[in-house]
Image (cartoon, rainbow, N blue to C red):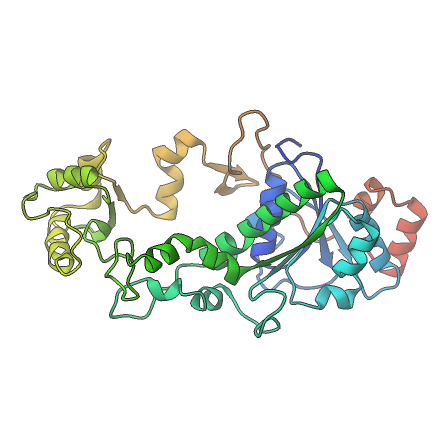
Length: 380
């Protein structure tokens, strides 16, 4: 095991989406992350805990039946030795299991107790179900996306689950662990996806307050309204992305497209954008995407081909950066960010629940008689 987080011990109460993503980030960078699965529980998604479950890579697993006497005690003894714990259940679930923060922090005062939810640990929606799309819908972010004459698009579950959720949790965990290293005192991290999605939109809140952002879609610099910051279809039906925000890059874009710079002046006049966009779209439709890729290659026009999943992982950029790796035959993104002195090791494949139950308990100091008794009782 290598990476800048080597030596940290994290317990992950296995759930869906953002919490596993946060745990994956910590494990990728060298933390020892132990997954506690609910024994016998079937996953909602068939590919979970298989080699295709990228978010579960790099961790060992113990399966506990927390309804069996003694199982909670085993979980607590693991938590006692951990630097942090991550859970992604609704508020109150961990308390009902006997693993809430009051109990855990009393036993392990330096523990970073990470709680990942959509709506937060309190508030009017705290106990209500939701998913990424619901969370970003309630932050203003979703309303700012897409064409003005259509409902907002579904931007995958990148903003709420992973950017505003998992990455926020990973940052919170490292922050709390660093603080505990200097003070000896742990704390609870309330990582809510609504908070994280709003934080990701911080620049736009500032623009809006300063009069540089309209609530009307396609009337702003970065929402697809500007002809120089949008996507275009090419002759073959594939797309090209244009992001020539600065005047010097815009000049190169117009030159490469063979357009008249006197007409495409980069003036930020939203009323002129629809016409200019139509005219630029007509130019892109004259040639296939790969033609435009060659035209813009190596330039500062800020114009790029929109690649498919397959094209992206095979592109020379990804190849040069070694941006993708293969784990048990599954192509997937490499650990990031990259560290010069303590690089991350190649992650191991995801495992089935309970693959290391006895091994983990032994490694973490539980004696063999108790392990045997736990196995006999069905606790593990």
